[in-house]
Image (cartoon, rainbow, N blue to C red):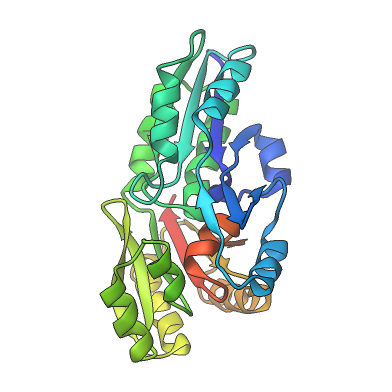
Length: 280
């Protein structure tokens, strides 16, 4: 049985990795006024943050149209028997639900929609693992069992510089955003039950980063092999420096750097920084 792996653009998996692992991607979009841009196709992260600075209004985001899911599944049906469709958390986007709906509309391919319950490269961890297993000829059931196993140890914490983006996007309540900006708080956020919620309120960026390091150390100091990713919103130098620092302390952890692209960057804003990881 030949299994395809499909994800959406918010996993922000590098192009060379996608090609090597035969990962298929369906894009979400950002909308500036009357202009719609498919992320990772028409607009990339570095261009996006530049565009945001040039517009008075924040862009909006939109999930892939149902028809695009149907079309993608039908195309995959020509070469594959099954597709595992791994998407960003259903608590912050209707993308996963789009895959579920489209799965019932296609014939000739068995579709397994999978809710990562998270986003960005933490979602990408599931995708890359699934793709490697698919290339090894593992069955969809074996792959999904492994993803469920991973879910027990996947963690991600992130801090934002400006809460107004999350508030305007409806991803955080107004009261929380108001209190945060009033106190100059850098809230630590994480996913709980598929939605983004505050984890702790911390007064400075430096202290927020240190707190994420402490949370990471709870898992990393056990010495078990892990994969970790530093995710940044247009702060490549800061991400690189942090990665080098952590890699020296934890040689048993495989670190990589990723980014908050246009869709997630719309909600978090420039300057956001996060760390995600899981135990191998």
